[in-house]
Length: 280
Image (cartoon, rainbow, N blue to C red):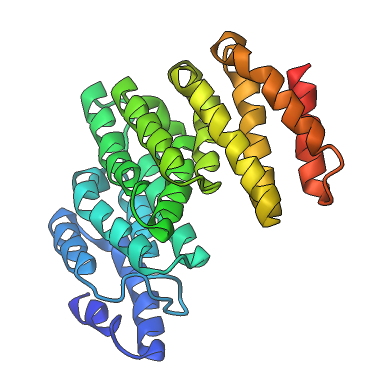
């Protein structure tokens, strides 16, 4: 596989053939070869490039599927590569999605529910912490990290996340929202509201205010996607959290929803009506 890995840095056709061969090779690696393979793959320069046969970073997903829990000791080697890829891909959605799938696959296949609790927590921590820290970085990296975090939180294995990790993630989300009202953060908050309502409640008012701010920005900027994400975030916060945690903000949310009932974009109107139904 060393030659095939070397071929990833060559012309597109060679790269495509190498990717196809590597997808076959990864299935048959033993523990020692797996370690060497991951080390070399992590050093590949064009890790985020499109080989035509799929993004190179997607090999991490293939490895997780093929080797299951054997991938878990290598998560700390893989995650810096994921972050580096997200940082250098200039916001390319397809690369971000490939990274998201890789993270979700490591969480799904890399944890044996029968293993000790601390080991399961550690794997989730190793997956989550680098992404959580990346929320405070450049816009491209923060967006990619948000997509990866959503995939991670949506994964069944997220139930093994420690309360400390969930709290740390909430703190990063809160700080990130204060620094820049980016709507992609809403994706993670929606996922967390469904899975970790109790922890999120401590941040409810802050998240609601941020959601309202993003909604206003979406209106000013004429950004329908931003408006939809903001409204959905507000909806899910009201739907899954204890009403007492945001009681003083509900009236404000209703007022803002009233302004957007006749939004020019259909999907925004639908989201607004769903939120008003939740509030009832």
